[in-house]
Length: 188
Image (cartoon, helix red, strand yellow):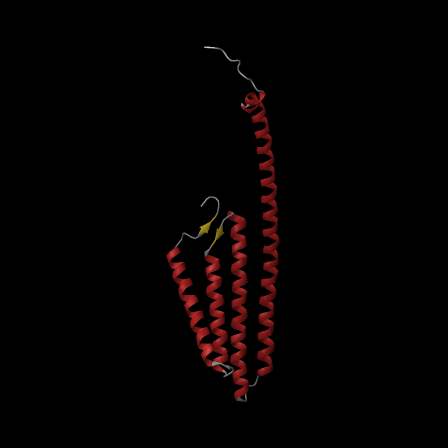
């Protein structure tokens, strides 16, 4: 056999891992990744805090407006002498309930923000409650229109009531099926 000279190339030696260099590069990348992750996590927490404060202020404003609106509507309707005033009272009561349900929706979102800030997990349950409250609000709105005869298309109103009722039913079933397994997060 003839010995052929072997070709040696520097590329083979370049491809071999260099433990000291790779470890130093990996350590620097890990520190950068950890520092970046920490900075972004703090920024996310700050955003959640700001959103929570704005939701708190918005909820307080909506509650104050709901009370002020109800007081002004009721004070303008007393004493009740005519049938028009009676239907106006019914409308004022339903409007107050709708406004208070909106306050509940905002409170649920605020509670979700607070829960995230404390546990760093997102919960599905408040969003299901928000859907149920919103559908109930729609049912009340259509019912108020039907009670005072302000509905132009009766069939459409009945369809909307049916859809809202199905939403409440399906979201209630979803809540029941989920039970206590409703949190989404890194440790769950």
